[in-house]
Amino acid sequence: MEKGRKRQGDTVVLAAAWVLLAVLGTLILKQLAFLFIPLAIALLLVYVLGIPLEFLARYRVPNYLRIILVISLGFGFLYLFGRLVSANIAEFNRQLPFFEERFWSYVESLLSWAGITDAQLKEIYEAFMASVTQSDLKPIGSIAQKMSGSFFSFLGSTMWVLLFLIFLLAERERFRPRIMRSLGRHNSEPVLEALNRINSSIQHYLGLKTLISAGTGFIVAITLMLFGIHFALLWGVLAFALNFIPNIGSLIAVMPPVAITLFQTGSMTRTLVVAGLLTAIQLVMGNVVEPKVMGRGLDLSPLVVLVSLLFWGWMWGIPGMLLSVPLTAAMKIAMEQLEGTRPVARLIADK
Image (tube, rainbow, N blue to C red):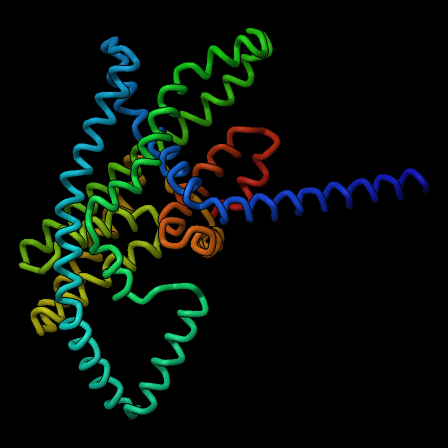
């Protein structure tokens, strides 16, 4: 009896310690978001860039030269591409009052048909904006205004990512020998085998997911350009970023360009055609191309995806929402490779 009570007491203490550790970890991640956000981005980029690095390694390119080449090409492309996106955002911000006027005219027409007066509409709008403010979220207009600032301010914020990325890539090749020296050849073999499985699985997912997302964004941008829709490049980038969020991201990525098509052209027929094409692109890329290329889907429970979005969104805002699913997927893949955490991976899986 005494041993049972002691064992139960130890279990309670252990559970309380884990809860306290989780709370402290959450507070640290939230308070030091300015460091952990670029670190998380850099860590994910290490896996994404692992594919071109391994390709160059086959041709016996030295490690330092591989890192310089891949980072230079990557950030050079990001700089040129970012300038174009920044110009699109600035132009979108200039035309935002026109789009907002069109939006409210459509809303008023729709609500007058439903029998809702202007006073009731104003009350609904004020209540919604109050809830948005209390939730520490920002309306679309203020987000666009903030993003339309100088592109060089964006480059300044990416310096942390670049710094972390250089050090992580430099340590990537040295990690294996250090473990072998620390644990010995015999003891290090199971550890290195588990790490290799985790790294290859995460790299496979993130690398191919990035390529598929880039393809989705490119096709969306080209389609919108063919229809003459404004800010086609911006909507392509949005489709690329939101493609990392399954189901919800694809739906959100379709809505802004469809709304802009309606505001710009005033044609319901063209709007429906654009909406149908964008939806078809998302369905084909997400349900046909991705499973064939990657071999399997993400296999995350929709509830886990939603909770992940809410948690990381609360932690780090919009960057956290974009990083939430890749981070959760990476953790799930890592847990699948270890015997002790495999039940947890099965618990958060969709199937």
